[in-house]
Length: 199
Image 1 (cartoon, rainbow, N blue to C red):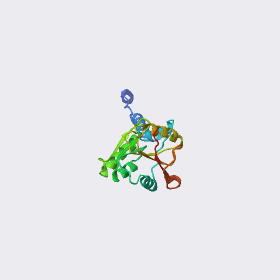
Image 2: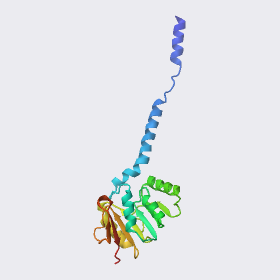
Image 3: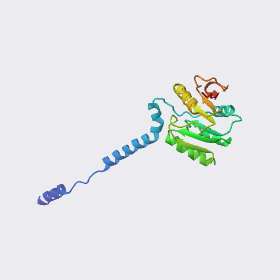
Image 4: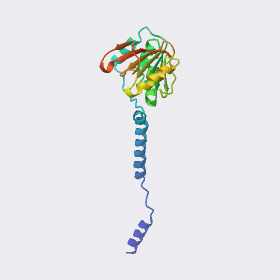
């Protein structure tokens, strides 16, 4: 009887082992949530800005229409809101000095990687920049895949900053007050070519 009591008391006096499974589960969940936020955040935050400019990849026809509009042109090229960089890379292939302006860090990194893989890094560059803060003074050719509610403000910026003989190609939505030199394509693939009047 005494041995049973001794066994019971020795068993109860042993410290209980801590369970870390709760910490592991909590830490794992926190890591997953943080990872999703880190990756998805740059794609979601445009919807929270005053003017939402979501990433919608250009179709092959849109890309071709842009360069039909710029046929015979040369010099510095900029794509405002360059997304995955496909227009910038195509411009580099066509002997423009090309630059992409994009706010989404993942799209900028992807664009740089793809450009490097295609051997175009010397002619195509990218910056993570707000297009409203990026100066347009140096460019000969400007491309914008905009949304309707940004085109009026963008038109003012272009008129204020562009140099002589610049050409602007607007995709999906036209500039509201300037008469285009040409309209190429149809439906969602339409692009408008503009020579910007200087005041």
